[in-house]
Image (cartoon, rainbow, N blue to C red; front, side, top):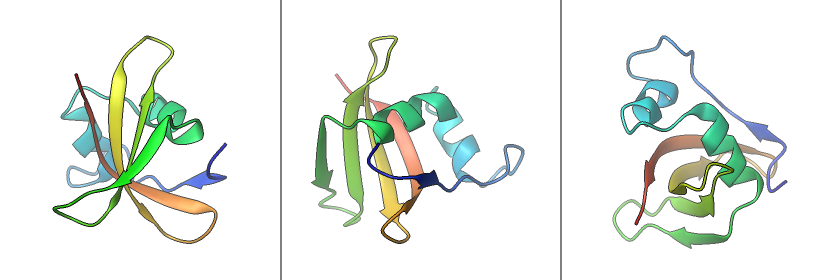
Length: 83
């Protein structure tokens, strides 16, 4: 696993990261799959944040934009399916 802890906001926080990824039809579990075993990592040209790319067990290719809090913890900002 790339990180040992993923920082999530409360599931019912309308402005939190859980809701933001759900707005893109992505689940917490899918984000955790990609962050656990990314196939590639790049830096966003627009935000400067890191983006992990990976395939879920259901075959979806996702991009997960995240902020590195420290060496062991990351905060997913958003996630979306890529083609």
